[in-house]
Length: 136
Image (cartoon, rainbow, N blue to C red; front, side):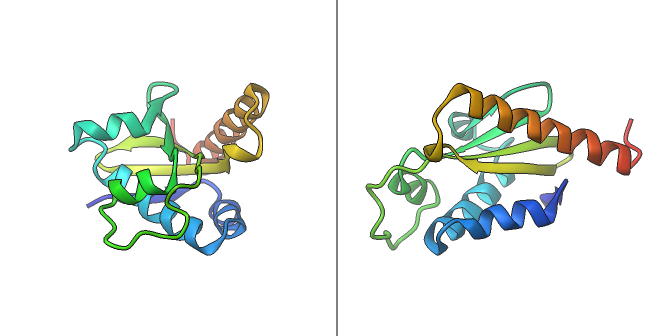
């Protein structure tokens, strides 16, 4: 069984709710699917990027249709051809336990500076979580 922990559940939930309903639902399903199958399905690797030892970036996109096909949705949304570049930062805590750190919509700002800022934010959340939870 896959277990999800959240470094900042209120912040992550706020980000998800900032997305429109279709995007929110698709992102939530994609994140769960990718993490549940991370170690089981080799093709999942193209949807993830290792940023460090256990630090992962989930890459949800590049279109709604790509994600719908990954999830084998029988019904396509009206957005199937629209671009989608969501990023979710996660720590793999082992034994199918994942710490969800943060997420952002890369289409709002494609710059390298924004990407680095979001990675730094995720790492700060991880540091705070480890101190709060006495993880060494």
